[in-house]
Structures are given as C-alpha cells and as structure tokens.
Length: 288
Length: 273
Image (tube, rainbow over all chains, first blue to last red; front, side, top):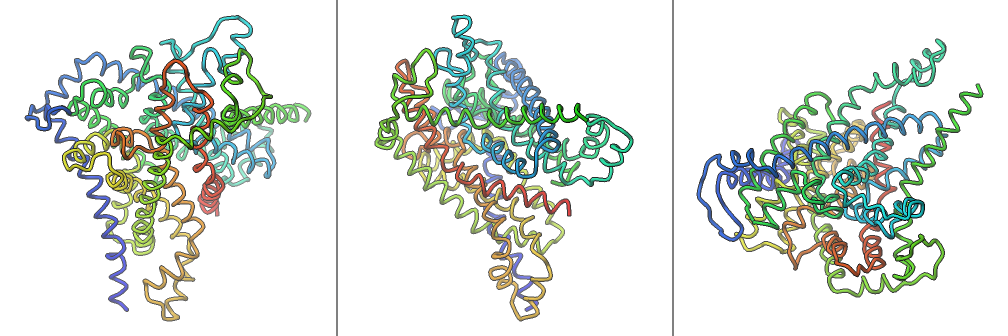
C-alpha cells in the first residue's frame, strides 16, 4: 500500500514529462545550434560561423523594420484589446441581466474559437474593395473603392482590428468573470458615498483587479507575438514590407525566399528569449 | 435616476453592437457559402438570393480539401488522444502528490504553451527533413503532441485539485488503492472539466497554422493550410467555394463552444468561493 502510493507519481509523471522534455528541448536547443551555423535549405550541412547571424541581423533593414512592425502591432493589439475588454466587461457587469450575461458571453467567445485562418478570411473578404460588406458604405457614398489592406498606412491597423475582434471580446468575458468574483461590500460603500458609476470602477473595482488585469496584458503580449496566421492570409506582409512582423520575416527568410534556415533560426531564438523573459515575469508576479 | 436609466440603455446598445460584430461576420460568410458567384460579386451586398449547395458539393468533392479534412481529423485526433492518455495521469499526480519539483514542472509545462511557434517549427523542419519524416502524418502527430500534452496537463491540474479530498480519503478507507482512486473516483468526478480541457487542446491543434505550414508540403497538409491556399488564388476567385471551405473549417471548433464556456465558468466560480 505504502509502496503503491509512492509509485503513482513516478508512473504517472515520468512518461509525460519525458516526452515533453524531448519534444520541447530538442527543437529549442537545436534552434540555438543551427542559429550559429550558415545552413540553408538547399545545402543540408553548414559550418559554424559563431554569432555572425545575430550580428548580421542588426544591420538588416528588413529585420529592423520587422521589429518596428512587431512593436507597433504589440502596442496596438494589446492596448486596444484591454480597452475593449475592460469597457465591455464593465458594461456586461453593469447593464446586463444574469441570463443576458451568459448569452452574450457565449457570443463573445465565438470569434476567438474560430480558426485564425477563418477569421482572417472572413475579414479579408469583408474588407474587399469591390465586394466587401464593410467597404460597401464607403463605396456607395463616394463611388470610390476603399482598399484598406493595400494601403501601407492602414494595412497593419486593419489586420490588428481582426486580432482585437478575437481577443477583446474574449477578454471582456474574463473581465466580467473577474468582476463577478469581487465582494459586493466595497461597491455598496462607494454607492453610499454617492460615487458615480464610473468612479466606482475607476477608483474601486479596477484597482482591486490590478494583478489579474496585468496578467491578462502579459498573456496578450505573448499571444500577440504570434500574429502570423492573420498576416499571412490577409496581407502576406505586404504591401511591400509594411505588415511584415518578426515571425512573418523569419518564415519568409527560412522558407519562401532564400531558405536561409540558420538566419531565420537566429530570429526565432531572439523571439524565444523575449517570450521567456515576459513569461517568467508573469509567473513571478501572479501565479496563474 | 433617469440619467442612470439612460446610461443603462446606452450600455445595452453598445453590448448589442458588440454581439452583432461577433456574430455577423460569421453569419455573412455562411450566407455567402450558399450563394452562386453572381450573387456574391454584386455591387450591392445581397441578403436575399436563391441558395445553392454547389459550393459545398464542390469543396467536399475536391481531393485536396477532402485529403486536408482527413489529415486534420487524424492528426488532431491522434495528438489529442496521446495528450489526454499521458496528460491526465500526469496532471493528477501534480495536483495530488505535490513534491519539491511540482512548481517547476508546472512552470515548464505552461511555458511550452507560450513558446513562439516559429521557434519550434524551424528546427523541427530540419529534424524531420534529416530523418526522412518530413511531411508525414506521424511527424505532425508527434509535433502536435507537444501542444496537446502541455495544454491538457496545464488545464487538468486545477480540475483535479477541485475534486474534494474527503471523497478520495473515504475511498482509500474503503480499501481502494491509489490507482483505483484515480480511475474510479477522481477521473469520473472531474470528468466535466477534463472534457473541457481535452476539447480546448483539440481546438488548439485543429486551428494551428504556422507549424503545419512549415512542416507539410503535400501529403500531410491539414485543413487550415488547404483553406489558406484557396484564399490565395489568383484573379478569378471562386468566392463561394472559399466561403464554403472556411465554414467547413470552422464548424468543429464552434461545436465545442458550450463545453469551453462551461470550463471558463467553473474555473472562475471556484476562485470566488
């Protein structure tokens, strides 16, 4: 009996952990390994060139552009997602009956459950300059087609809209659930003090939810690093390189254009480091 | 009082608009999937038209789409199965038999969920190419197992932790061994949340795109890849067919929406009490 008790964790954990360790560590270590080489898809073996790939990255105009695009993308999507999530979350909590809340929560979950490829296509078609339903009013009024995805100034924002559509509505449901976990007393006390509704949220409710909201922001930051699916389907990094994010550029370097697998790998390693730093930070702050 | 009332009405209108924005794009795509091309390519969007099943018939009859569907079902199914078979016991051990590594293991498992896919896909592409398994279902299943296993463990630990300890103790007093307690007590009691965890893992790999794009070229292509290729077609775009394939791709994840929202509810209910 005692023996069996001490046996269970070993029997249950070892296979899963062994597989995870192999499946996770082999690729990540290998990614670092090939990033020190000059390997290309057409030539299977490369030689070691040390840090040359990393040094080359920082004088690569397209890489610097990709960092800029990725940073813009991060700021746009994280900020808009949180603003929409908090706004709609509060409205759900404040203006909807319990039944309505459940129903709306279900609807708000729909966009994020859709495959990213589907979401990207749905919106790409909606923004189609000739047949799109969103661009239709503009076309009807001005007589000119509106092509947001082919304009370098609006393309990134338009794709970001789809990301915010998926995540903002989803996080609104989470904000609602978080508000529901709060004790009612502080709300009542504030109301007795004649606080206005917005004051209750700005000074009482949201400060109480500071820690989980910051965690949500970090989760979204990491999630936003994978903009690839949306951008690949909607713009392919174009027009020009105006929507080419880091993962899109790594993909095109390693796969489409030149097959420079080592060079692409060095970018992936840098992204991995950025993600790990952000993730360790969340873990330390809030035990998810 | 009336100002508050007005605020409430404005809030409800905004919520209704948000709900509309969540549903309408999907509804519109579905509608377009039943349209003939002439009804889609109109200067004014059409809400009333003669529906046709041609698009779906064409999509399902096309070898590439059908092969993608079969690949997606087999690859996602097998990866989820392996993930559940290995992940559920591991999660139970983590929830019920904590030791000094438990926290580190949980950190490791969750960190995998956040690994940038491109950082996994590039080295794996080289590994699978070198070993001759590139573009096979087997290599995709193995790769996706990384995602499903990590996800199942991460979501099932809290589900097992919510099983009342007293029930397990009582079973132990009745002479159940530790393995019997897991299979006959913990597993059935936590089953609802566990199904949610497994469903989430399925949706995750069913929707996965980047890794599949880099690790397959023809034989093992999954449905998202096939659908995205249709969307990149040239000038004379078969819009109806495209919409139909997007609808087909989206149905399986949407079937799980109830299960997933139930999981979200139970996850937060416990925190409050």
